[in-house]
Amino acid sequence: MRIRESRDKSQRSPWERRLALTRHRAGRLDPAVQGLLWTLVAGICFVLLNTLSRYLTTQIDPMQSQFLRYFCGLLVMLPLVWRSGLAAYRPQHIGGQFVRGLVHTAALGLWFVALPHISLADMTAIGFTTPIFIMLGAWLFLREPMRWERWLAALVGFGGVLVVVGPGLTASGGHYNLVMLASAPVFAASFLITKALTRYEKAGVIVLWQSITVTLLSLPLALLHWQAPTAAQWAGYLACGLLGSGAHYCLTRSYGVVDISATQSLKFLDLVWATLLGWLVFSDVPTATSLIGGLIISGATLWIARRESRRASA
Image (cartoon, rainbow, N blue to C red; front, side, top):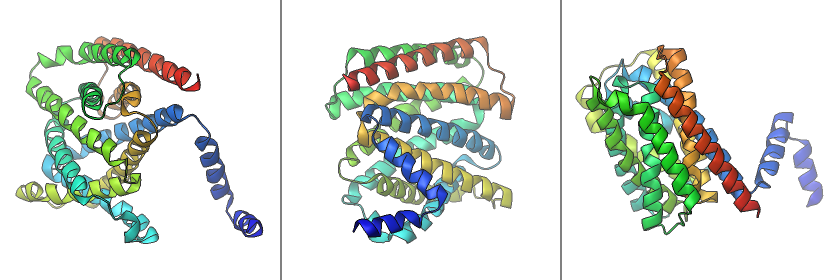
């Protein structure tokens, strides 16, 4: 048996050996650190996804953009399904997958409507209200402990969000900020359902069935204002599908190794990436309030990450 394993290892390419070594080292990390790292990678993927989605949604109807983003997410996962077989992606509770898909579709509908009218930094900052709802929901429904450090980090981070978005709520087009804000508790409900599903479903199964359910449920609204995408737009939506599937996979993995509440404060760091990309891609010059709020949020993020790491190693 050992001889066979050594032969298999010797037949691996250098890239496969490096990947296996990385997985081995990552698997030895403390679960709290693993969860935070998964959340960090998911956040970067989400910000890249949001940047590309905002660009595409200025060209194509929001409901069609929502459908194409998840349809392409399904397409990029098909090779994995083909390689592993359909049986590997058969859910144990298909009803839970469709409930999660329905809730996530509703949240996405609000999000995509507001997306073309809000800067990336403000959109990301408003989305940071979602962790507040997630922490409350995890405490109420999943019976996860809410230690004072998590409450404090969430409240300080939320205060930084208010510093960022406060001026925008009183400006013209502020109602789109409210539409984006309305999506936050609905997204929180979707993520809480995801956390519950991780108790008996694999991350890949959850991500695949999210793509299937959101694609099916988004199609009727997409057909109302359908326009034929160009080749460049198809390429963009395929990239969105790849980024979105990767982000949700990382997020689901984080939910599987650590309490959902422990990861939420790290998501505030997304504002830094969103502000930078908004400036580079859309020439959205960050305001003083965006920079001050970002510093507050980053400070809360680094503090809670350090506290969680120390508590886990104690």
